[in-house]
Amino acid sequence: MRSCIPVVLLCSLAFAGCVNNSGTPPVASSEPPPASVKTAVQAADQSGTNSDKGAEMQEESQTEYNKLTEFEEYVLVGKGTERAFVGEYTDNEDAGTYICRRCSAPLYRSDQKFHSSCGWPSFDDEIKDAVTKHVDVDGFRVEIVCSNCGGHLGHVFEGEGFTEKNTRHCVNSVSMVFIPEGEKAPPKIRLGKDAASDADAPAGDSQGE
Ligand SMILES: [Zn+2]
View 1 (cartoon, rainbow, N blue to C red):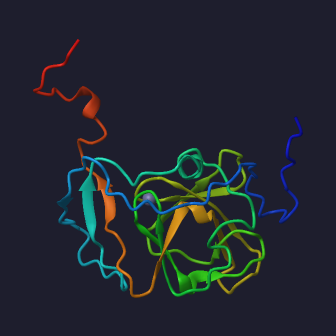
View 2: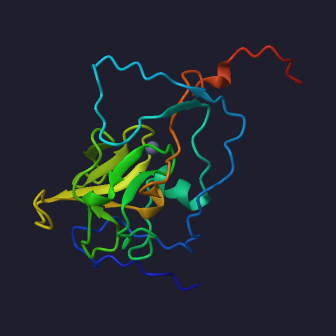
View 3: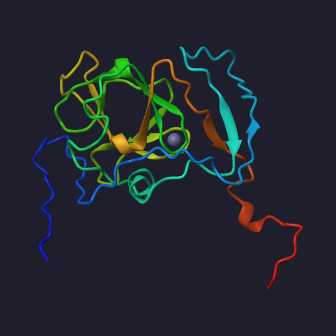
């Protein structure tokens, strides 16, 4: 069987790992999340007033994040990378907000996006506190993840001189959903406190074992 050869020389620094997959086009799931507890959370922000520009910080406490396709899961959870130049947002110039596909947290605004010609959507800044950076397992790149759900977004590079901010967030399209300006974004999902530990929850119902 002929194996595909990853294209690694597109951008030397931009190389974010390449993937051969048949690329099911990311489809925004329109199904409502199953069996989730939809409780509006009053964000008890102890750090005083949170003046978020434009974004209404709506949140929902649920038992699980948005349903992902296999490929979305591969990128967001498995820290995979979509192939260069195939992502649906690489050349998107529309005004709006990019939210996390997994938890719907706002990540980037269109005015932070620029063309880098590296094959992935590029941003020179993020919405405040939306993105967390840490050293990649490869030891030299800086991985960026969604601060809310930890979903893998891509990598950030500095010193390339693309924009005045000298920073390039190289983000997988599939990690995001674009919300055009004027459209209402879904609320950010925060997992309920007991959602993660429901395995040992002493349920009242009888177990058929
Ligand atoms: Zn997220």
